[in-house]
Image (tube, rainbow, N blue to C red; front, side, top):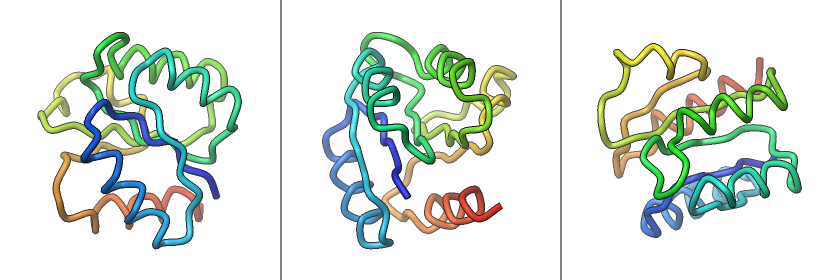
Length: 115
């Protein structure tokens, strides 16, 4: 199973990559929205973790574009800020507040990929 991690924070990229590879997933990384769309098309991931605040295209716009291309792909919104009241993030399958403890992220990924 392949996971696309979209985040502009290098530390988050490395943390997610290490932890998710330990779980047996193949991980591909994108640092911004334009790169994310290219990697999304090229790599055909099984799931996406998507930061909301990116330097070029915001994560909510990316969510819409990815869902237009592949409506059934599970997308987890991942952010340091609480956007749960923003109805636009409701199009995602899950919403995670970033933390150094990735247990919630890992269990959410397992749930989404095993349904």
